[in-house]
Length: 394
Ligand code: JHZ
Image (cartoon, rainbow, N blue to C red; front, side, top):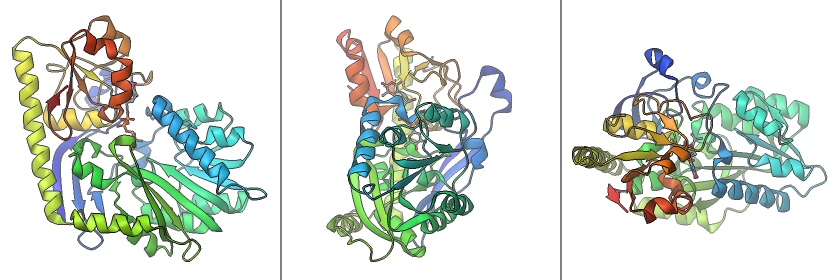
């Protein structure tokens, strides 16, 4: 198995209080490609209870673009798959109810499966019905027994997080109605590699899906990949639709994307090795730039504290000496430290109160939304530092 070694890392979403630093959790972060099926995956697993604990801090509703996207998703399901007499939709990893709230408002039978208590409670406050458990084969059996088969099983930024993926697929195969669909959206390997978005690699992303590897995975569980749609979210996401064999006609997009992947050699070891070399170049360039600005007396503040920030700061050796704080709009992250690098997280108001010369955009996937909201920073001479696909200043 070809692999890339990013060294010692904390949990991407392991935001912590200063008094928790002493007992912080670390693991060895390496990612490899399976020689047989070309699936790219983490080579060590952080137990899911440590990752998706009750206070899991990521809120899927934290971006206006995401809110719009998930509302559109829900409306699409309501107009297409959920038109029968008493339709039923299950969402795996329903987070704060960003998608299911619209389904609930439409009065359609639904169930979110969300093990993290705080976000599950946020969704319940929106009228969403939630089972606070991890999804696997046995949970699927329970849902089938209690609610009957599902017309849609959905997951966004969740399926690739589950290390026991085989059990998830067996569960979906159990739960799905004869003409039901399993739809999931996950960051796309082609985008991660193409943009050298190495910060997408952290404990939560057990798998880095591509069309070829998802098709092979579905076939192993007697399911069929019938559609793929690229989305702009998270710097490049792919939406996969899976059905029971011969129930739906695969769209031309499946074959087209398989051909694209072959042409770009996405499933080849050499591609992953080249990616590894580019990652080292970005690390060196970013470190050199931040040290130069620091030596010249310039100030750099981080913008956004996504899970990705833990990978970048720990891998590149960036601490509060180079970036004194990062600002983020998520209340549950503010007042805590970025995992491993221990850069304090503060509110965006602190950024606005005293603009630095540079803002290092950790939430680069939200660049358009953030730069529009922070127009004044640029107008007052501030500059954004980005590091994918290479280190540059805008
Ligand atoms: P964002 C998440 O990763 C988590 P993350 C998860 N592990 C996953 O799989 C991926 O998505 C795909 C803040 N922000 O979306 C909010 C502002 O401060 O890139 C968030 O903390 N101001 C499930 O954590 C962060 O930036 C703003 O205006 O990498 C963005 O996190 C906006 C728009 C965001 O996800």
